[in-house]
Length: 146
Image (cartoon, rainbow, N blue to C red):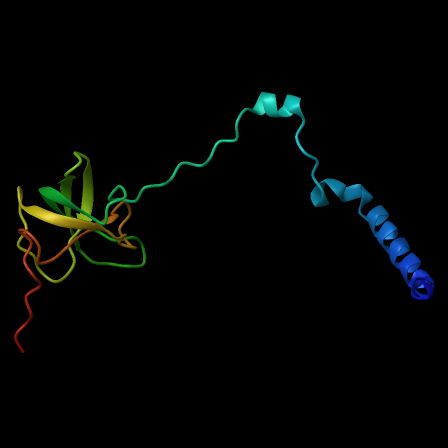
């Protein structure tokens, strides 16, 4: 019991400091402590809605089969300058998209079947798919002879 009486001055100063800090934040208390919503507020706002799960370019699948509708040449965004080879494809779920064809040269034409995977091409706006080389009708990248 004696030790508690020795701690009394320290405890009182601690309590006074915490009371002073509460008065210091009295003007901006909504930032630091929020009260629970009332029943009326909860009734007006309804159930809290969860944000929808965003699906990627391949709609949650790692790769998708696609049929080429048309081969295109796209120009990249501002600082870059090139002719990027792309293809308009119809995915196996019926949706149409633009896919980038990587590597130098390709053998793709209309009605070819390709495998596409998600992968955004940074300097081509709206191109979020990449054709997988060496699968179905898309040939491997041919090595140059030295």
